[in-house]
Image (cartoon, rainbow, N blue to C red; front, side, top):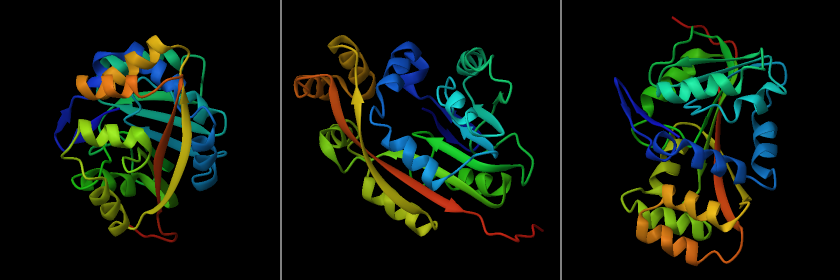
Length: 240
């Protein structure tokens, strides 16, 4: 997905450059359903208003629409906004707007759940987005941040090898200091064939690490860990 900065948007190469491959990646993820089950448990959204920040081409919006009253996708990359609008054309409760996590095009106190999955909220530096989430959430609303757990499984080791300057421990400490709880979730990515598996790993990792990951995955499944961070807004909050 997409990483944002205040007044700037930083390219997310995987989905921006290879949206069709990223579609196959989304299809492979969470084959056990454990991640979605955790999301529903920690951030229930039946009959509520949900915003998906950095929604990409809207892959998760129809899933939210099964339960939510309304679903808004926010995405800065205009080609992805167009793809997302096509995806949700048959879902009257879903809509798309261009925008960024650090400057959400929403009114104060207008939604119940702010969701971001592997988008923008990667630890220190995302404070503007956290402030925006608090601004648009109603009292008692919840922000839920889903990110890959780079400390677990072979996938986590490949992540660290591809991005050696990323410190997953620092990210976790940051969210804890910001008042977030965390739930670790194990699930599987299951691919249709080896070609798809290889294509996906090549858009996620550096070439050498991708080849190592392909060679180290004999079948069609990968064990992958996630962190689900949640923080609920106080009730009875009066804004000044």
